Length: 265
Ligand code: ADP
Image (cartoon, rainbow, N blue to C red):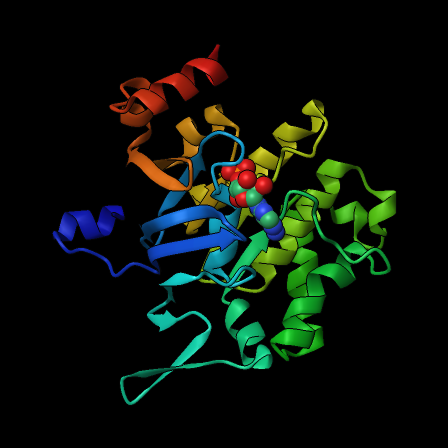
């Protein structure tokens, strides 16, 4: 809950609601009725062993993966659907893209366009998907590249940038879409260790300015410092969740304890 809402004794409406999401690949059920709410301004970190379904879950939230069952609501709208007279109608790909732009995702492998400069990568979504004025977008994109410390790399291509710099371009590209919230899928796990800090610093700054973020991460120190809530997933389900001090210092579930012993050893 945001501080203001807590003071007023009101409960904010979640900006993201995932309700009983299930997903299988063939006979392998990867997600078992996973539910999660994220409130405005909240930073939620999802941790758990490799293969737990964290990335798949994240991808069902913006419908990069279509769940087999369950619902996702983004800003009060059903993801992938239009509500007409109380009935859900599936959206065409074109409308889905526009809806997806309300949720911006930062991927493990950056996913920048190699033939576009840093600036062009940041401008692409707002201009092409959101049809915004390109002069205005350009001004904002330069500002975002400055904010992530890349003012001298605006006209560089991804191949001319380090992994940490590419990921900072990807973060600038995500925020330039003015999304309701940011999804991060292990944003530092493809980076050389010495480049991790510069990306986590940018993410910490975004969290501090009150952005809503859902972050799948192996960086327990970052999660401890920045998360309002930590969700521990294993075997395609949420095992436990709570404030960082509770989940990380006094986990209730044996599986959480075992995982933390392993990663904090
Ligand atoms: P995590 O992010 O927690 O490491 P993932 O969501 O990447 O877990 O994967 C969960 C399980 O789903 C793994 O067993 C993985 O092999 C499987 N999986 C993920 N994507 C696919 C896919 N496109 N096709 C088949 N299996 C997949």
